[in-house]
Image 1 (tube, rainbow, N blue to C red):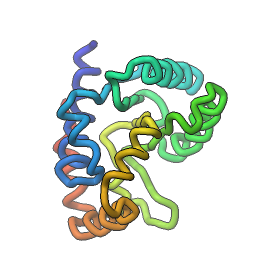
Image 2: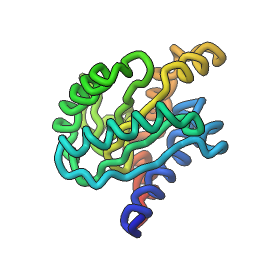
Image 3: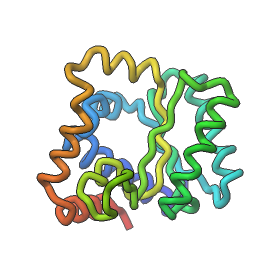
Image 4: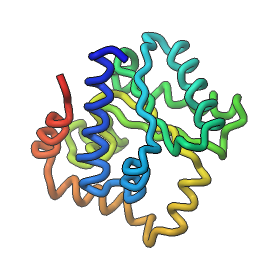
Length: 183
């Protein structure tokens, strides 16, 4: 792996540790990170066709390798514009259906400029899905369902996360996200 890609992976790993785990945005993440069952991979894709091909390869790897619980497919060279990224998510869902993985895997979305519908770009709650680079997070649905069944009040996680983000404030969150970047 190139030094640049190593820095990108470390930046995303820092984000997972400092945001997702330390702020408990996802109560299921710590276990898999500690067990080293999270795959971090950087794609060299510079167009959507290449990104879809890499997404397909990672889905197939996840399907065949049970030692990997989840994959973070980081794509720093494409879909850096959030609206283009958001449109691409339909292509990712179509690929899941085409591969007959719909219901087996799902793709969660994270982006440096993530914005939920009905929010302003700098609203703090957007930071629940902001990452240092664009990321397609590949999840096993069966594992997700098991985690949800064994964790109390999972339906309250999003509202708890939004409340935490609003309490921390956009400026503090922006600074925290900046500390994740490795140059």
